[in-house]
Image 1 (tube, rainbow, N blue to C red):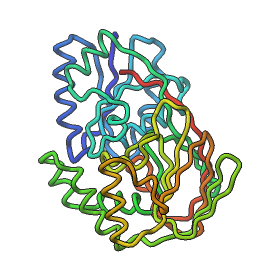
Image 2: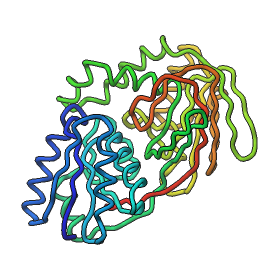
Image 3: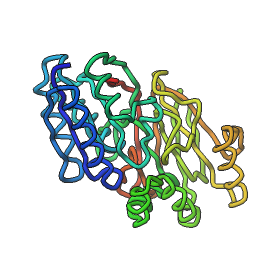
Length: 311
């Protein structure tokens, strides 16, 4: 490797990005590896930064390294996919609150080991990602983790606006914020009607509580909502949970955390396919890779795609 282009979100994980950047800079200097830094200063800025950077890369001895949370990786992926070189590899150093993609891909979180591997023995792997088209607005985007409607999106909304998130991140227990906001979501999230089209079959649920189309098992900072999903099988998975009562929810959640047997519940439904369509009939919370989507009706068409991961 000849040069590293660092794309950084300093504010990710309540300033974990700033700490990670310092450690990575130290490692780059120690390894005598050339680099430059481009820092995101407003939400969504890593998309155009990544596009511009990928447009300029025409040498496989140069690479893009994203430092931030899953939302930062999402932005960089969308930027690269919109560039003149959409197969430009991305390396990712996790510095967010949830870091679910890094968990799914088993990525290195030691700065010096991370840089040494990129410098001396990098491997480029094709990994799955999701792509969706909003049939109501025409918007098209990619995602590395999942797009959720309902309960998980409600939790993301409350977590992103929680003062506890910043405090907990500073003492490395940021994931606990998700757990605390689950209680609020239990009270605030109502059931809703959803239609699912997959494998040429249509399914309707009148009491959906959570609808998550996912690229791997995790959401909410390591919660294995769908253990069978993985980033190498060229499929997307969708989980639909119908609203249980509180006692049933706590029982299902304990099963989810213990052994994955929640998947056998009558309230839990899942499908695997390379194309999935989801339609809701009322405004709901939505989240994309841990970032809030406007509360609205959804009619989304999903397809599995891929990107090149450098690790």
